[in-house]
Amino acid sequence: MNNQGFRLSIISILLLLATLLFCSCAFRDGLVESARPRGSWTVILYFGVDNYQFGTFPTDLWGLTDNIVAGASSLARPDSPILLLYDGAKVGDSRIFELSTKGVIDDRGAVIPASGEVNYGEADVMSKFIIWAARMYPADHYLLGLCHHYGWQGYNTDESSPGPMGMDIITLPEHAAAMRKVREAGIKIDVIWFEACSITMIETLYQYAGDADYVVGNEDTIDFYEEILRVPGMMAWMRKYPGASPEELARELVDQVPMITPSLITNQFLPLQYVSARKTPGGKASLDRLGSVWLPTQFAFEGAKVPAAARAVDRLSEVLLDDLDRRRPALGRARARAKEYTLCPWYVDLYDLCRLLAEETDDPEVRAACQEVMAAVEGSVFARKTMRVDKRHHGVLILFPLTPEEWEAERTNRFDPENRYLDLAFARDTGWDELLEAYFDF
Image 1 (cartoon, rainbow, N blue to C red):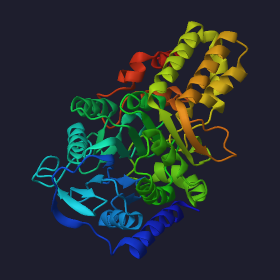
Image 2 (tube, rainbow, N blue to C red; image 1 turned 135 degrees about the vertical axis):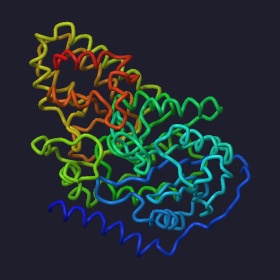
Image 3 (cartoon, helix red, strand yellow; image 1 turned 180 degrees about the vertical axis):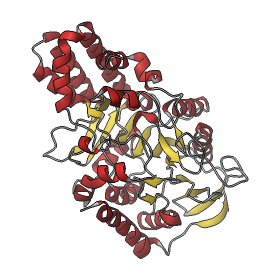
């Protein structure tokens, strides 16, 4: 299958679903809501759709996304409030949907300005929406849904808003600022769920883990077929179990992910599509760096246990830096063999890297540090779903480029050049960035 075949397969299934199932469904306009009585759960979806998927097709599906979401709501009939801030490709089309009533909510200017256009890449928009949703739809528990992830550089691109890449994005510092405002408003997020690629980097988990009890996401590339199936499935599950605990909901988000879909074929071609599409933002690997096999993954992390993994990485960095000249060859061999992220091969599975490093060296101090990292990674994951044949996805990625050129490119955020890898909270609190700088002689 070539690029054109991949593109047609993805577009055809989405259009087929939109046309055959959901085009007759729509949200009702003009509803004005007063605050609801307190419930068990409120779902807050900050899902950016003003962008392109892998440079191939618009996420708003040429204006059909709202019909698809309305159709999914009709099928699943959710009881809990599900708020979606929608911003499509057209200027002025921003709206707030409430999926349980299939209504368009008039927020009276609390989130959406008079222009009718929001910027998904603004931290203030994100915090305003979360706070407004939680106050209008109070609940015992809150699930926050986010999407469109670009590793440590950010998520939720808005391609109708200005920025160095011709778009805006929520960077990790902006995410931290938004969630700080949410906490200051007295709102506690129980579960953060990413419907996105590669969200389980230790660099990003280290940030997200402080913002929720549980974080759920994918280690590799998103499965578009799973995306279609899981959302209505979770709506139906929440209707059946309205009093579910945050741990139960996070576990169910993992359990609902199908392992066998057409993406087992089509996603093998995504890296080639990604690097060749003109509209694709972010870093692109050279063709000779592609070839890692895609397999479906899903993990749930206990937020309170993620810092232990960061501390273990810090200890490993300290050990390696203590005698890097002697330990560099084994580290290089382990890195060359480590499981890479299919789209951006400068991210590797952290557990797999440490397992291989322990094999490549007879240094007891390095081996002990590797075992500490592997145990901490395993300890932070409380739910997982992978294929039985998959022995190399363990849940956590880490930035470890293969060459000095890749490290040079990844040190700076392409979406926001003032935001550097070395300035991330994970980099400040661990020695991993110092190890990379020394390893590549920067």
